[in-house]
Image (tube, rainbow, N blue to C red; front, top):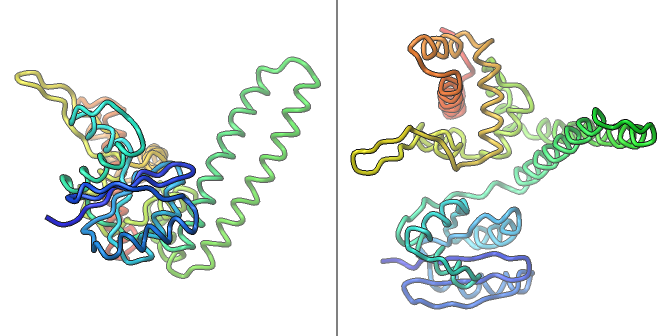
Length: 309
């Protein structure tokens, strides 16, 4: 058995647990603490260092670990939560979480993944910010519809105008970043060659799923949260469901699937066959999204644009 490390990341500190030594310690989440972390972990030659994704707090820690050449896996929090439930672990503190993450790494042994490079991470931040601006715009436009006082309407209109300006500037930044990278230009051109994939969806996939083109079809569908799983117990068998994965990617693929179901001849025929066979429209849409991500994965892997024939 190798050495497995679990790191729980909070705003101010990193709780670390090492197996099989069952050693626990913490460092501050700053430059000095990260240096101490790497210095302490490197001599252990760990088989895997697992970090739970925590809404951005984990980024600098993951970069420090990967930059030191240590094998790294950033784990979906839902996986850790379900694993803890399966173990019957209800208590929750940062040291306990670190121990559970370490045990998850030792038992499940997720495959280490390379972090996106600095520019890819920058693009991911831009795309995430664009998504936030869009959500704020949608909320303000809903408020504008309900507002009856003229002064409030003017206030909302000013904010909408400012958000639209910010959105345009973000789009310009994203475009400039993409166009500055020959690799991304090629990847975007390959993605948008598929009817149903527009520039924004392509850029979301580039930023949020750098593994595209490197995994098999089952694993890429699972990463997008589109791999079906069945609830079953004894003789009872429930319906297949989807879940987990990367929400931003899944949402983008659903949008693309709706467009592709109308305008992509291959995927439109695929959807129509499913509906004609008695599948619900939602089940058919999920199937189109899953087929779409496998197509995109193959296109990036083979570096060949969409072909109808």
